Amino acid sequence: MHNFFKGKLLTAVEYANGGKVSYTYDSVKRTSGIGDDGATEPRFTYEYGANGAVGHVKDAELNREACVAYDLVDRPVEAELYENGALQYRLTQEYDRFEQPTVLRERVEAADNTRSEYTVTVSYDKESRPAALTCESSLTTAAGVADVVSKRKLVYRYDRLGKSSIGF
Image (cartoon, rainbow, N blue to C red; front, side, top):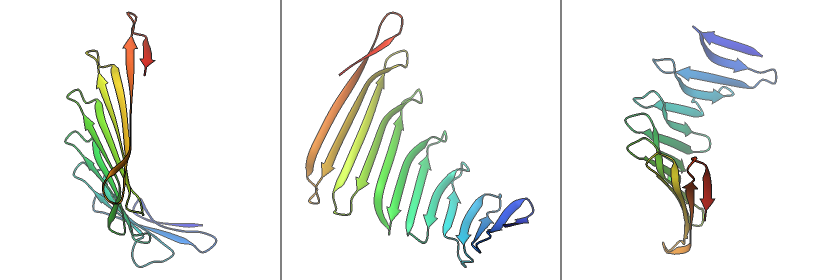
């Protein structure tokens, strides 16, 4: 195995079996591309947001893209996965004024044009303890009609000592 460095950055690794992985970097020394076996273009490319975190990853071989968005305090609020340009998965996260997660939504697109959606909602008491957790799911047919819907709720109760019990 041979490692090649430019400055202090790893630019390539060559394995005993002849396989090779190469790395490229942007102007602030973050990984911008990873290629394999001498390809002229990187298989994976990375783009970064203003906060410095990875915001976009593209896999050229599988034609997939993943995107992540952050809010003004660098919390992840949205993630998406595309395959062949079509949205396959979407996740959104909401927070309350105390920076506690309150709503998580997932949307999964299937090859048969059906869609599954999942939502988890959390409420908190005045002491910022979980008070209730609601889970909802639905399956939407190819015609856009909700086919299967489910909703369940957990309620947290606390005694005078702050110990919790869960009710359905």
